[in-house]
Image 1 (cartoon, rainbow, N blue to C red):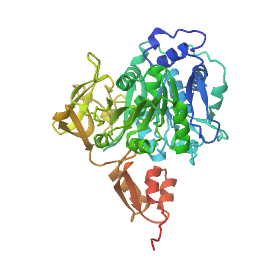
Image 2: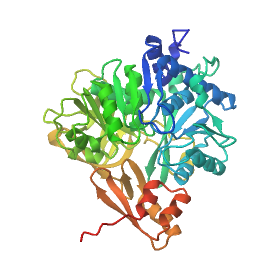
Image 3: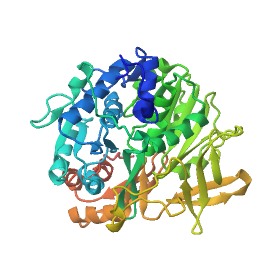
Image 4: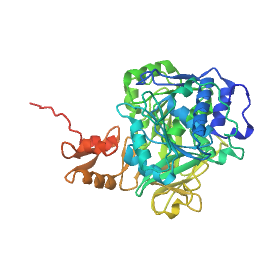
Amino acid sequence: MILGDGDPADNDLGTLDGLFRRAGVRRPDALALADPPNRAGRAPRRLTYGEADRAISGIAARLRALGLLTDSVIAIQLDNTVDSVVALLGVLRAGMIAAPLPVLWRQQEIVQALSPIGPKAIVTAGRIGAYAHVDIAMQVAAELFPVRHVCAFGSELPDGIVPLDDVFASAAVDLAGASRLDHPAAHVAVVTFETGPKGYAAVARNHGELIAGGLSVFLECGLPSDASILSTIPLSTFGGLCATLMPWLLSGGTLHLHHGFEADAFARQCADLGSGALVLPGPVLTALAEAGQLGKASHVLALWRASQRMMGAPPWEGRAVLTDIACLGEAAVCAGKRAIDGRPAAIPLGGVRAPRDAARTPTVLETMRTKSGMLAVRGAMVPKAAFPPGIEDGGGAFFAPEPDGFVDTGLMCRLEPARHGVMITGAAGGLASVGGYSFRAAHIEAEVAKVDAQATLLTVPDALLGQRLAGQGRDRTSAFLQALGFNPLVAGAFRRRKTVDAA
């Protein structure tokens, strides 16, 4: 607990929970987390560090009370709200492994991703928008034998679901024995998922690797201590963790969350933020800036999930300090402040320092171009082994470095000698990227054909999403795909659209 003892254990300071405790001991009554003002279904939550600490301990105690053991994998599917942050930190405080899932994933994707890692529980919400995510979690649990419990935030939950809302009103909980005593920072903390030609590969990171990735962003963008941060990026990917969770933990400030873009709510949040920092998807940055919707933010962090689009971004002319964060798959992130001319900085070839423009700064990443023209990386933030152990012998998708420590990111690149770096030119063949969600094109087409043999599905360019899916099929194809647990981006590609008669 951060209240009462005032001195977290020394061996816990290298963990995410240790970073949170450090900020909480220093400012227990300061605002730590704030929900979107337009949060659906319930009043927005606003938690001080003391209140957030009690909720985190409440989650950890609830998981322990279910009989879940240390290193149990706990899947989390929540929208970009206070609940998602509290749940993830609660899993870690319990000594377990968090596996955050993209909110648009449905039954098929979740089962495929989670099957190899054997999760023991799923944490979700009764509803997220129009979807009953607790029902999706129950369907997944019915397919995956290791899943023993479904926990959920929200009201009117089905029988058998473990409720979680009461952790926000609970008293302090004693978690003696839940923390690790032997090098806790070296244990796996979070698992994210990389989409590759063979399917979903689990990418597991320990606390030290997560902190290294977060530090690379935090040091490059130059956020001050106690910063107020408004983020639209959820925690379901390594890029999201480095852009949202880690800058907040490292600064010890306030994290405001925005889920599902709504212009009026975002404008109110920007006004309340004042001169704080904004975290946004890179492709929407220019449109928001031209519309005057970035407020008075002093820092902007632009996350590029499809990093090949970053170098084509228009020059930045805003007053805020802009830092681009290129996602190199789930292997690493590379942050760089905009150059004097407003253009994105190239990804350095060789050692990447943080911050880049300062002397004698730490090297946070090392890059190289392989003989086949792919970008490979290694360093403190890059995982050192596949997960779970032994998956390399199974013949399925897995993530693992080469003997020299380098990991092929699956991103094609070319040398940029004039800019002393490399430029990402595209992803490995066979993958489609829609607004940061990656799909195996051939796999989707084959699955759709089982529902509608006459259906056609195309990937077409899109100004904001990079690519989008467009399909043509029977009138009921979209409904069938939704019922079978397909991603809404796939099912929505077949939705009938109204046409306007130009005459």
